[in-house]
Length: 507
Ligand code: FES
Image (cartoon, rainbow, N blue to C red; front, top):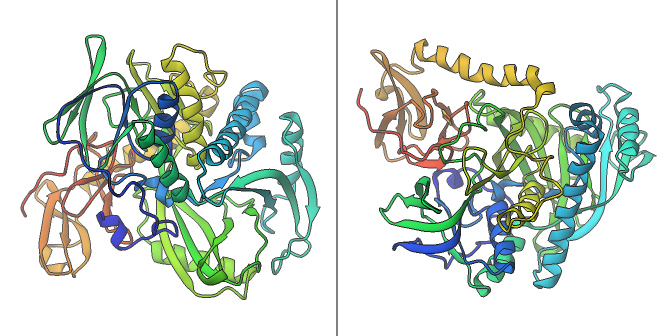
């Protein structure tokens, strides 16, 4: 269990994936080393094994214990930034490629769960985009026209069986899907191991380098993995690379689950037209009841520490639509990497010849992860991918130059925050469970007092590229607003791109 799990628990986390797997504690030689055991890394490993390659998947945490365990698993191929936005940003050809690839990913999940006999509650269902009363009334019209241009099937409708939405216009996208993500990955891991793949949790990788005709992954425990090829499938790339961190930005999103009578809310995927939008789905709960899952309230990582208020807002919003909702059962948050043009970066890292990357989930992490599994194994085998230009890691989205400037303002304003005063005067001011920044001369300290009164004092400077960390009181971790690293109160890395723990320091 990492520090985040103590205070935040998703509705999926009762399912433990590959809990028998052990850390790698010896040197290893393999065809492909995959770093990151989320949906992307595991799906890529599965496809590589199908091609007869030997594969090891390494993760600094548990298998499928990162952001994949925090998804709400809307398997909707529809671009969640709207099809109209996608079309205007990327043009018809690339937008069609995006939609085709996302649909192919859902088809592939359906095929694999059937072929491998994985009981993961996979099902096809409608996706419903409904108009929020405060949104521009033209949004749905624009979306309808964009869908037609992209050959996406959509129907208009009016009135949903939710309180206050009885006359609300909506668009209905048939043939979307959903599932239980960790049940799926539990089955996928079984298939990976049955085909001879290796899964190694709690195996942190410090460095990945090309060497001779292959790659070498240096582990934090001193061992190394030699491989022909590496795939970096961490939420944000952990290897030395120049091309990605200025083209994507980390956002926190919040989710809650509630007990509700079976069938009370129709089994569909719902989302509205707000920005950030709300998203809603149903999953099976215990004793014949359902769980209603609602998410939203997104903000830039590290730029707010008011999760409680965001959960209050989510609770109020969903209870307005479903007044019969029962007790809250889960609340959690996760991080998504938003790119400038709504599509991930998948393929060969342009800085290397044998290191592939998948990042920039754009809030559609499950489908993006599986798209990567359709592309990268084919590319490693020397085949062309029909989606290569959509997700080209080297692309520089010129139309998104304005967003580029605003996303990178985070790094600039973060640099200014070095000069700001500390949040508390000394560690004496910390109550149990609290973290805060303390100024000590020119230095800033990330200080935390645990429930037993033990004090941790670490550098408040992110070990990735030096941004200034912010305390996240809900997850009880330090968030980096620049590129998405998370650190535990004791300084250990929870989420990359950082790979080095925060050094100890003293007031
Ligand atoms: Fe890049 Fe912190 S994640 S500076």
